Picture (cartoon, rainbow over the protein chains, first blue to last red):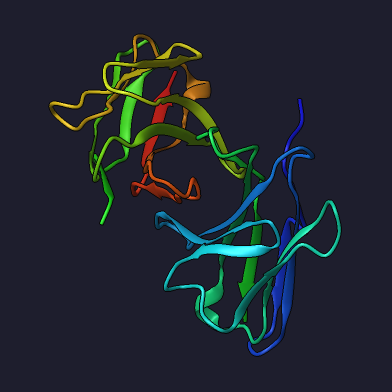
Length: 114
Length: 115
């Protein structure tokens, strides 16, 4: 069964460093999302992406964050200058089309900022 | 804005006990409703969903019915197993013109099942 994959599974970085989290959505899907889950808290929406542009973003998704689909398969989340509070599990999700309500999640990348 | 409220955990049960995890929502219109499960050390997996009032979603012995009148989507299972121990998230996705609506999650309920 097709699935969303994410790399790396874990990343440790120093405060102020840039990180790029990578996702490979399910191949025929057109809509892509990033969510995050700070330890012990709820899963929060960050951004949605369609047709090579952001379609919606949350208040969390400030200028330090960016997303990109650099080729036909990858979908990346970049944090330009990490802060301690960016430590969280980051989930990528995808869905196939406008009428499909289900989003399929990847296993997540656990980011630790020291 | 849209929101989801779940019962606080942890919920601790013995194997073969009956499970209910309450979920209520606030949303404009008629959202789609979901239960996701997160097993220890893993990501989010879709457990079941319902897209309109009175729909019942079911999977792996779990069930939830979309109740518009009470704005609820409670998760139930008749006989839990140790392997059901996980965190369960209720979520909604609004309906609208854009189709890009984000998922709004509850805080999650941890289920612990002992042998």
